[in-house]
Length: 226
Image (spheres, one colour):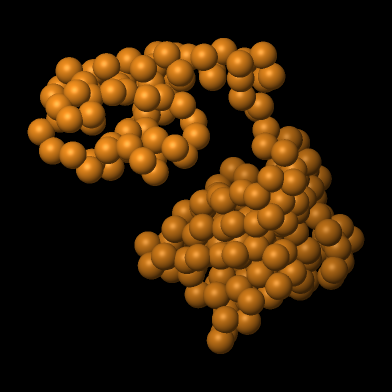
């Protein structure tokens, strides 16, 4: 303000911010304004001056956007693998303990091996930040493996953990086993489970059902049809 006379100055330097009477930042696209910041050092500013300031900002913004388009015409579809990222994942709050572990041993192991920073809210919202794509995906996959809920109809790769006369138990995710009944081993009749499976074997099985007690029914023969 020069007495009662306002002057609108516009650029991207610090001079106006330091010496001016109002710091008025605007950001946006060619279609309109998306953000404003106003630091008032004067009072009773007329609306007309605000309008003129916004129009001056629009002129500068369009000039900058035009130059940006000569460098990159559209946003990249993927972030650079070396760009720091923050991702969020929502889990069942009952599974929070599985991610933290006893005395924090699990979450400490995840952070130490991936370099990720992990924040867990009581509602199951987990925020994961890492310096690059590889580490953040490693941390997210680790968390998913600890918290994934069994899904009927999905095919899992699991390990045969025990053999019984009536079938076999297969571990399909950490802490979660299901049973493949002998009738679900093959399309033809199987006399002995050991003729088809052995402990430690890696197999693909389909989750066909979960009963009222949470027990999982798996099928080896249905998985081979997919």
